[in-house]
Length: 297
Image (cartoon, rainbow, N blue to C red):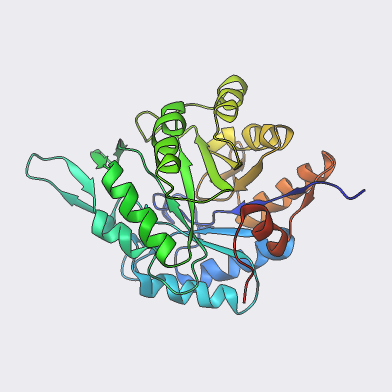
């Protein structure tokens, strides 16, 4: 009998950190693509991608940037392409309101799914307030906006990745979207823990992760992401709970205390741990089957 297959996602960039924090962080399409290909060759089957502006490395959902990145990656691999519709906390993604608060620009978020090549897109369906860079940034994804994001993804043949930060997100926001048939099973839910920059995001503890997994909807395939030093224990526990995992510099800049990581180091370590626990990294074809994606043409 073959070992159970686990999807390992590489999140190489994100929408927050910059090269001042780590010179290993890839920010432009060519260097992101090169990093993703290295991680694909080491066992990653999904790439969770964020785009950055060429002028200053700040966040964007510009479909032209995504298309360049997607095409560079697709030219050398069949890894699953998952483009962000969250974007980030600076650059094109934020604007200031009349009351002094900042807000993630919803119109920019919609652009994240317009790029050719995207098979999946993140869908954060909750309303939160992010504290970052001295700003309080509203991220309002109301039920109406959730429907708009989901319907436009469905029209493009894109599978949503439901990102959840708390138990409320699972039992209220994602459950409501499923009841409204905004997605089809299997549902792919990414549990994100330890995001201290986001109000309402839960820390990682074994009990918290267990609780969130127990409340997932039926027919859910779940993935676990965790920030900073929570990444290693949370992803290891995820495997033991029957889930899938995400690692990368989007979530964690360090390999160990005081030592900056590279994306390939984080993937190689995750592959080693998975195999030690009796799992085998899924190929992109196997990952598509697990998540209910269409085969790659």
